[in-house]
Length: 382
Image 1 (cartoon, helix red, strand yellow):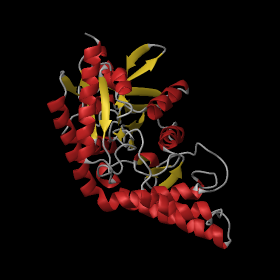
Image 2 (image 1 turned 45 degrees about the horizontal axis):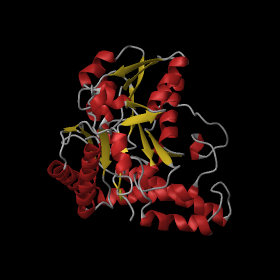
Image 3 (image 1 turned 30 degrees about the vertical axis):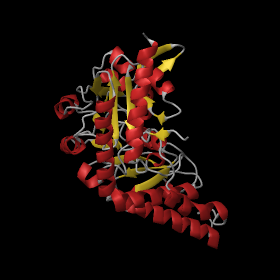
């Protein structure tokens, strides 16, 4: 029996339509996009089509999309590139205390280079207060980087409000939208952002491919140097097969977004209802259900160690924990800490995330397996 997969926020399977679109570029359309021969031009055309597919999903111009190796590179390019381009204007960056390490660690690096970073607090639901953003702005602030949706608890930030505030002060805005692209609307005009990060493996494309939206006219320097690919903004021979896959995944997302949102929302809520029926211990919900990714549920089963539960149900259900276990000690995530979650609750927290291939029957069974796992742990303690 294959375990029921409830860890779509960690990674997604490659969609069959994506795999099919990629196959020719693995088999026979192997040309270098920089070559003038027929194979090279076919590859170049495929890249442009993928760029246009992504642009359609984001509601931007195709020329504003560059391809990267994934979300981490996109975040690095956005933060380091803007910091380098605007260091003459200022060295202050605003971010939040619930960002992914691909933003956090870049900020720590920039601090070592002489930049100042303000990490904004969040409330118990992981929300950044726009008033806190306003209070943090200084004359030397050059960039605000706030994730669109949190990968652990699913919280959606008030990006459009933050962007409007930033524009009044002439400050650029970047968002890590790795978790939100394909799940909710990510129209860059509505969000008002200047830079937006995409990670392919979060929306049914392969791992190792991503994109960065850079609004036309945004000052940004390269972090890689070499030849002139991607209009001189990201050197290196393009990963054609994976680029095609990302383009197809974005095309699918754009054509089915509303239906997918409904599907995910209904399944996530059904999962919660089933857990509330089946589980015989107190549950604490961390996800703001009306203001979050439609597929995500972060929940603590009070008194039940998350790692023990995950191990108990591993053969039946794939889930993620809200804590990390190193050398026999367990520490809760920085996100849960920033939300004010106590250590005991954090160590009992799991993340359950459904996806486009999840079914109601799977969700019902998963809730039952989790409930039985909790009962087993409780019995063993008696």
